[in-house]
Image (cartoon, rainbow, N blue to C red):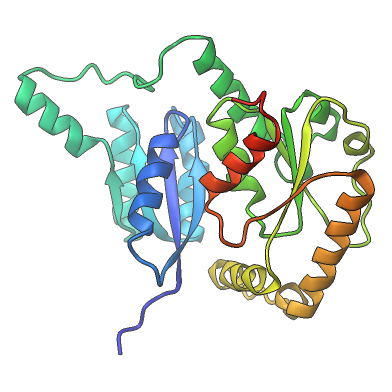
Length: 273
């Protein structure tokens, strides 16, 4: 019997927003139903200083590396370091650009983020990406009022990837973990402008994702409580109670893709783009 992993790390390195890579990675991953990607997205990587921590992260959690890096020097570093680490890597746009160059008989201009128009919408997307990164996992609570959306939920309910997906569409999104016994930030309880929405899933689904997370973690990390279904059920009960008390909507992401979850969030607040 072949030994197939039921999870794998998927590293996405982009010198722009990363949207192209996420679409390509998810389209390919969807063809392998028995293997689930753990996505690591690294947007706006445009110099060696930004790239080095990314390569260190890949070394800690090896997997498939997809990248769209126009700068040839940086692309060469990614390619060579991945070869040294013996992890597969693909410069996603390079084969397509080669076909264009051969057919058109002219070299590409190799502009970073050339697929994005340098207009107000483009800069809104960049600002939203930076906001999502600065306000990930409960960081910088003083900025929650400036968000369009604040996503809350217990561990492993896809808060961060959903935040990044929304940010790629110019929607400023923060995300905050719900932990039993720990009060939510006061700043969150006082927000007026943003939509606050809670993501949940079934205990079985969350347990499975958490088990994959532990298996993919470096070191000997193990926590039976973290994956225990009864404990997770209590966490979900607590999250629902918090939302009921604050009149916050809840979205079950058990059978939703990130795109479907994002669409459901946008539908809750029609003013969002």
